[in-house]
Image (cartoon, rainbow, N blue to C red):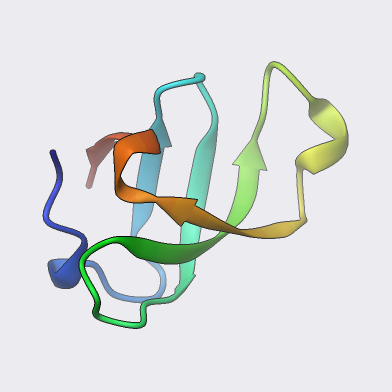
Length: 62
């Protein structure tokens, strides 16, 4: 599992569903981050939207 506490706004994350998101807010609880979808192969309508993302959804960060 990725250490979400270390992520800052502007960092990108790869989700397990193949989506890419940009961190827009991090409440520093280690479980949730707010992301803005940059790429969403499964649902292109999500691109540009913001959503809370749980740590278990994150495949990689960097």
